[in-house]
Figure 1 (cartoon, rainbow, N blue to C red):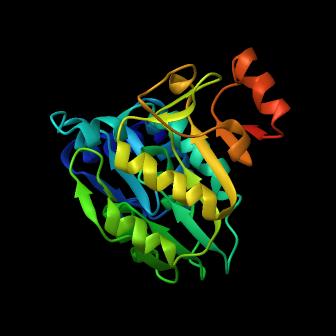
Figure 2: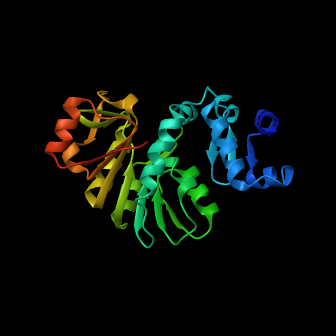
Figure 3: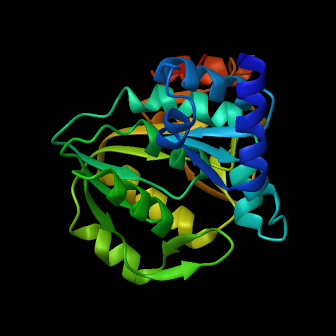
Length: 255
């Protein structure tokens, strides 16, 4: 029976971009919600679904638009990004001012955000909309120039906006990390804004998957010594681990 149920869910995800838990409960009224969630996790492991808040997204809905570099990044290493984001979500605190940048790993936090009174600030319009849909969180969207490829707001207006924002905890994503160059990115304006965020944040948390280890892009926006916590999906290479240990960075390997 469970094989037929999972096959039905898989077929629905081939036809639709999103299948909600409510739909599944209506279709299978005698099956518990926990079992349906396990079905989604099974399909996620097979690469047929992406587990999100309230249901599952079809992987086809993401991979079908491969001409968009932003969507390509969003679909890379999905499993690792979800694990990292889930670990990061444990650091969320009600009543705090939280910054989330436009990195594709940070965006995976949204399904794990409870419906509580958080205050979020983000440079990503889509993330802002998804956080608003949760209900109680208050969301600030940084103003400025919207970059199509990176789906982020940056530039002088964004920098001025950040001057008036206090940040308790900042979640950021680099495009690369090396012992020599620190945390790097390929967009100058975005890196400039990340620098400002790190200066203002009481706690800076960097989210990075292992594909970005020992990778260097043109612009450094901070070094290991500038961050408080690093969350990744695999142990750091020896050189990076020693540097993080020396700089007192709390390294969390998400499992």
